[in-house]
Image (tube, rainbow, N blue to C red; front, side, top):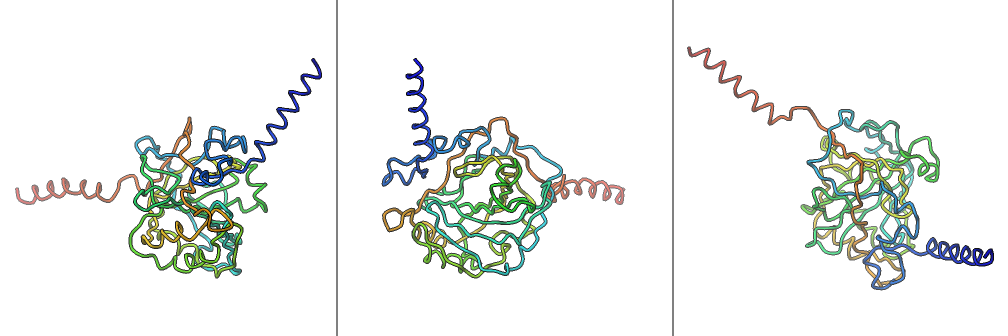
Length: 315
């Protein structure tokens, strides 16, 4: 009996080790990597991915709750170029730009100040699908999504941050198509230098504020507690999803779809690199608000008052 127990234990250990070592991937990669773990199987790669506070989510607007402390953010160093170069790289899952941590955010209902450590993108396969973002609003998704990842300014490593349930703060921005955005020209040109998995280059840094909507349009956002959207799926993220989208032209978005590859050669284009929406569970999504009464409502309140005053004058 003891021998049987040891055999079963060794088989279980071997199976767990195999699952833990299995490479994770997106569903779009399975045509060439049939043995990789697509999003529904990420919990076999890391058990965190199967927990109950995962990201992304679908935000149902008629169920969100107003929270009064979700005031405007303060952005430090977002308006200047960082002193050193940025490093842009293709990690086989997305294009990521590593930052120095000199830019910081505060306010916005955050209990701490956070420093920017990297940003990356998620996108779809075709513009016509209109579905490349990870988060969605009432079931509708955007062409792309930008994530600017921050960690508490007192931490020096991400390992420290992911062990704190609020160790990371990610700013999420939807990207929709429209007019060309010249602020993105130099970044998109660098995609030619990181076409294949494992490639990376230095690039001249940009003011982070040039890549996102104007500050006055960043007061309306959603807030919830969640996780990283790739393994190891650590549940250590304070998420902020802004309502105002970034606008890029069709051709600018297509550059991400056409120039990047999951592989070290031209075997497989990098497309549909997003995780499907995860169950919200018992979490609450909160919203910020510019003011209790919006300007249009205020105007409506003025009309009856004017009518009343005019009636008194002409009696």
